[in-house]
Length: 170
Image 1 (cartoon, rainbow, N blue to C red):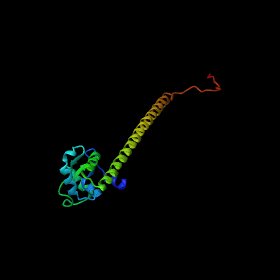
Image 2 (image 1 turned 180 degrees about the vertical axis):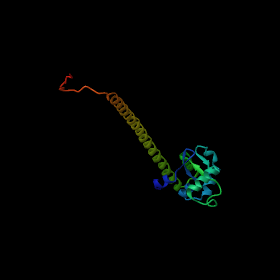
Image 3 (image 1 turned 90 degrees about the horizontal axis):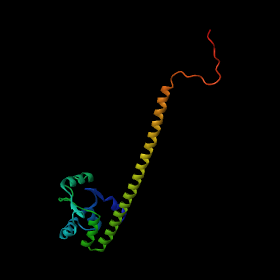
Image 4 (image 1 turned 60 degrees about the vertical axis):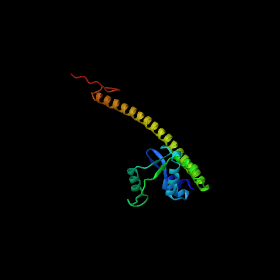
């Protein structure tokens, strides 16, 4: 299974990257109700940080994002599986297809984590650059302000420099 397809089905819900039960069922080529049934039979393997059921409002937001009608889809809110929950699914679903799909899913999560780490590093470098640039602009602004104040003070008539012919007034 292609990593890009899997990555496109990973959502961020409650601050966690998760895959939803209907997407997993499609990947495993099983019905969603059978996947949910297998999970419910082994619910002790899925603590809250491995799997959780979406609330009604989260489900409604999800439905709005997918653009489906309120009567379409499942009657029950979907399960959301974290990376650890997907790994735990391999102990519940024991087909060779499930094993291959799980390997692909774990690779997709790892790839996303690597992108996130690279993004965080790039973001840190950008912030450092912005701070350094702001400090330089602050220095330039301070020098320009000093020059402007000096110019105001220098508006007084000054003595000419160079060869001056002095005219005596008689």
